[in-house]
Image (cartoon, rainbow, N blue to C red; front, side, top):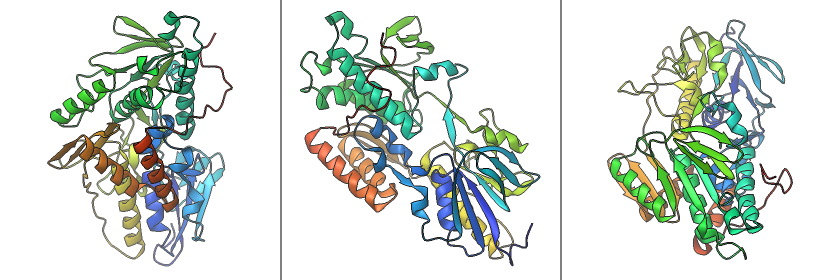
Length: 427
């Protein structure tokens, strides 16, 4: 390894999500660093608003920014579009689809993917929500369901296309269920001639005994009431045992549905297990207090791929706020080390609260001891998401879209794109 005090060091960041991008932003200003960012896509995605793309409230470009745009004035930063296929800690290199990348320091922040608990074949029938491609596919399926109902041959044939099943009662599942309920009861109610979209049936299936686990029981009860007001059926302690093109089997019941959406679980990137160190049961790397890999102080792991314990010994949740703080921490730690710091600080997560939105003027928020519901929580959710949304252009356009949607309850992004007009499973 080169002398970190005299030479320009090569730092490779794998993954440009919240963790990787924020580490890169800090390090890009350091003259002693040559920085390479590699990601499977050419854009950074603001995932907390991804469901709004899938529900026709926002355009994909509203919540995504090209990675190169962040660093166009930083000559020491190179952006590579490619996928990491193997990590070789001993040789200090990454094998990627774009070639071999050697490094002096490595930040692994390659995120997670959806987990179907041993039933990967379900993915074709129940897409998850992690990428822009998945968001636009979900939007296509949801909007096509209403089109299919409009041309149904008989009233009996309406039931299946107008039934939507969401598997998983976490924030993503709740937000999807509430958005579909609101779309059916408000945005679309005057746009069809043969059907009444308000007859839509939205079913939220949760395997545990409550939705939004981690929130205070009072807020969970508020969210349940808000969902029911939008016509969402919430079923707790209900396990899905089968999913196909015609619906799902939940417990002992068969639910006929043309649209099934998956929000029930994620698994970290498989790269963590290649490091040869301890991983938790889910596959996340158990890192040191400074977020480095045991035995490899030159490798850091952050975001959904890292198992980081809080002060009580419990693992931190895989949410954007945690990843963002980890990325900033790693960037500042490396900057101090390059400037001669003899010791490393420990990472401390500052919990800034949790939020979930259910619909128009409906949300819950828990910030320390403060608990909010309804309009105040929704307003806080709006301003916090606008604040963290990357790029001035994105903030302006999202604010305009939300203002329009708020006063009109219309969704202008209802374009059905990709794979032609046929609905998945259409005979």
